[in-house]
Amino acid sequence: MTKSAIVVGAGIVGLATAKALAEKGFTVTVVERTQKAVGASIRNFGMIWPIGQPDGTLYETAKLSRRIWKQVCSEANIWHDEVGSLHTAYEADEYRVLEELAATYTHRGYKLVTPDATRELSPATAEKNLKGGLYSPEEMIVDPRKAIAAIPGWLQEKYKVNFLWGKAVTKVAHPAVHAGDEVFYADLIYVCSGADFETLYPDMYAALPITKCKLQMMRLQAQPDNWRIGPALCGALSLAHYQAFKAASSLSTLMTRFESQYPDYLKHGIHVMVSQNQAGELTVGDSHEYGLNPDPFDRSVINKLILDYLDSFATFKQPAIIETWNGIYPKLTNGEANIVLHPESGVTVINGLGGAGMTLSFGFCDQLIKNSI
Ligand SMILES: Cc1cc2nc3c(=O)[nH]c(=O)nc-3n(C[C@H](O)[C@H](O)[C@H](O)COP(=O)(O)OP(=O)(O)OC[C@H]3O[C@@H](n4cnc5c(N)ncnc54)[C@H](O)[C@@H]3O)c2cc1C
View 1 (cartoon, helix red, strand yellow):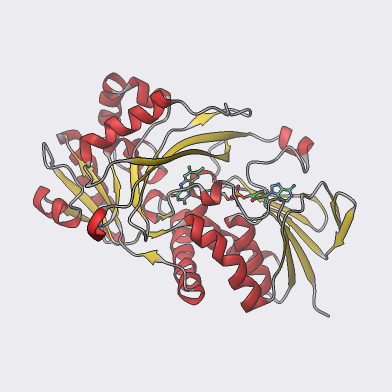
View 2 (view 1 turned 60 degrees about the horizontal axis):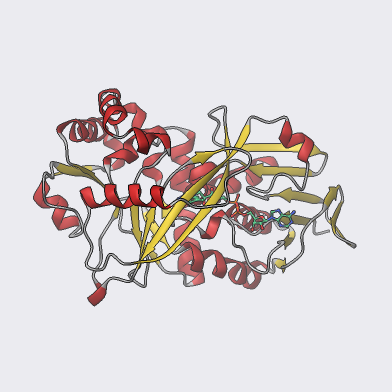
């Protein structure tokens, strides 16, 4: 007899879980509290970004995820751009870190590039003081708003996954999933509720080393004449933010300079990245503010810091800002990259992928389901 599963949440973690369960032969129902997903999964850069992951399980998971994204995008006719990523250096100590990363990750196909080659890769990179860049071919861009909206239809069509929109799950007590007065039943239940960990299993979450991270983001108008920036762009501050870059011993020297030159940036957890969608619009961010009760108000001082830093390494044909927003994701405070919990028999909670959920979810959920069922 076919087994059934319910997945709570239609963000990328819920969608990746639903796909993996359907491929295992389960009849899957996804229950999402809003009429369409509007959480972290549609608020991000859309960067499928293996470069940020350290060697080992996380990097392998990111590569698997990227392969799955590619397959999903191709089958579901979702726009994606295999442009890679480009880290820029405008100071000698920044370039030193890039050199070290290129020498460390020889198996990843990175290319250390001259200033001229950097500008050839991306006409958006600022010319003045440019020391060079590090190009990685692996990264891919999706438009998160479009991709996360399109995947449910594809899952429905290909695997008969059933989506129940606008139903907030108020209680899980295996095998029952309650959404107010309605009750649904399944053999297995997966809770992928992202930053809302107050509603289901609040006591379990209260005991976990977990917090929330709020990020401020901006969108710049579509660039004229189909002007493309090329790879996803990063300024040197990003080197301070990802586990993979800690492999460079010269990072500590760079951090010492950042601490004296950019105290406000470090205080607000700001680093600056840019991705471009199919329409030519640019997504720019971000900041990182931690706490269980994120401030609902966005601060223009943070956006100004982001834009000032952006100016130091990139210029665009059309810099007008057309949108600002924030996104929130859960973040584990013990350095772990995810949590998988079993609060009761038949129920699995998947969460805590932090700032890399777009990059890791497809691979992570695929492996988790394949190895656990
Ligand atoms: C600004 C920003 C930029 C980022 N950039 C990137 C990036 O470029 N690359 C990358 O790899 N990662 C990035 N991330 C991280 C990535 O977006 C997240 O890790 C990922 O989206 C988390 O997915 P999720 O499914 O756990 O959460 P969400 O997308 O928030 O989905 C959770 C869903 O569960 C639903 N839900 C919650 N509770 C209930 C309930 N009780 N009943 C029914 N439904 C419920 C919610 O409505 C929501 O739709 C970024 C994150 C942010 C915020």
